[in-house]
Length: 294
Image 1 (cartoon, rainbow, N blue to C red):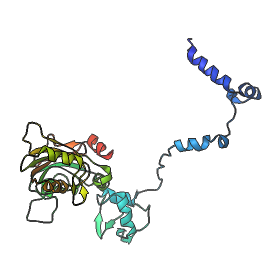
Image 2 (tube, rainbow, N blue to C red):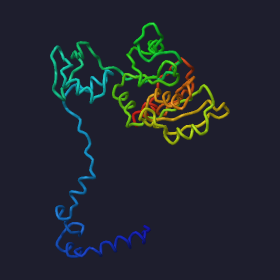
Image 3 (cartoon, helix red, strand yellow):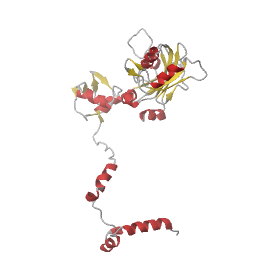
């Protein structure tokens, strides 16, 4: 048997440094080392901080009420807690305000007197055409719900909004928790727009945008901006993490430009690849996991 002499020497030297090694060995301590006083050494306190306690699964049957509501797509779990506290949720005809209340598959759950059900989570990406609304406020005008109505049996809701003249990527889901996360400003979800202006963008104005332009006391949070390659200088690509597309309209209007066309080509790692205008597709597991890790 071969012995690693370098490792053996290191171990032997470490053991010699222990002043009580031989003494403890004679006294019968297993391994020949002193028993450490955790309280005096501070070991227990330090070690405890490094240990992360794994969540313990509950033995109680059923699903937590806030989780059930979140699965229905109405809200996130945190928002569901507020709905429960406000007395807006009923289980089997009785208002429930208890945190941690659990429901069974046979229970009838109502929110605002309407029955809700826990659904399979769906994640759909639409390449929105121009002139479609992201709301149903005006029934006479076309809206994005018409384009995804037959995609699945679950009711899906858009994550954020794109105004009528803006085309491009729009995510739909019934996962209320993820939707809330992706629209929360502090998450800084990356969005890239391809913008066409009514005239060429001056280099001086582009530099102003890079440095930060104040519009109505608010400085637009522009991450990057550049001209689109092999295109006229009235076409630019712009990346933002915070703000609405109306923010971009106000920004360019302030500098004397009008946006003729605006297309969202990137959203949180998702692109328009293989999605023709007006069509959609469901996300794969890898894409869903990516969004949840943002």
